[in-house]
Length: 343
Image (tube, rainbow, N blue to C red):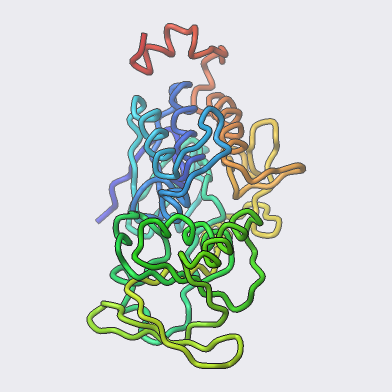
């Protein structure tokens, strides 16, 4: 039995902020798109790893959380009716005789598209799982790799492990919420912003949080409910702490996955692009956001937004080769305002 083929103008691989903004930019030039993402929700790392953590460098927003940015980008893209396919990884890619691309996912979907936009961030990413015995039995009930809802930690005894920005940020953010916060790191040197380290140390000195040098060795509890953990201090002495929630922040494991097999030129697991239009070594395949590379590249969300805008202009010439590109401003174009349902 042959699989149903989904025909579209463009497929975007990656539903992070840059992929979501690409929907809007493509929509402005009459390009319909489907979006494929391995996660179970839109937003990429913003929604997965720091949905309630403030971001300070988005133009026009002195402060906005990862989830709020995701929600705003989805609202902005909504007039163009994108179709999302979550929990899917693109495994197969080939060019058809008519010049279009055929993409196949691990979930059995097949797309025929004129344009492919890779906005996959750093590729497929997973938090690094600590090597604690039976940790899987506590995950998503007592052990979490991201804070999706602060309320899940209210009045709980929370232990945070790690020495990077995520560990320090959530130590500070959960201190007013949790019944007690303990930060555990193997040494008193951190890979976090100096201001965050200073604030944490001040809280510890004031007795409002606990900081312990050492490493966690084992978790204790039943039926997914954490009650304590044991470890070894920097001095070698064993310790045990009561704990209801554990946040281990030991970094991410980044993998390109099937992208590495697509025949694109790669440079240290990144995709080189032409900065005129962010096209890859393969005509019709574009790469925007953190997964691409070029001289002077800055891995910022705002850089990805710029890349999406130029990509869409080039994609128009592929999807609508018979039409003339007329650059328009949303502030003054009646046609664009009609598309957006405003004015």
